[in-house]
Image (cartoon, rainbow, N blue to C red; front, side):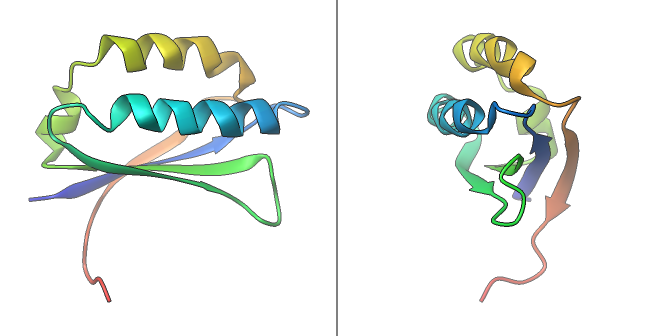
Length: 97
């Protein structure tokens, strides 16, 4: 069953632009991972420090077993621009119109 893994990420004050660009690059690195069916990055219009990073995976196991050293290394580089750890959760699709 296809699932979505969504993260709510807050940028440190003054790092919104750098984090926005970095999350776009991270999406490009994650997208070709086996089992990944796409990535969406959104920035909150009322709070430019708040981002949604959503990955679509074949399954929860596909996400948990994903091997992508380049994406992981890049994620470690940009973590200092995060305001605390991201909030993450798995979702199933109920409806698409």
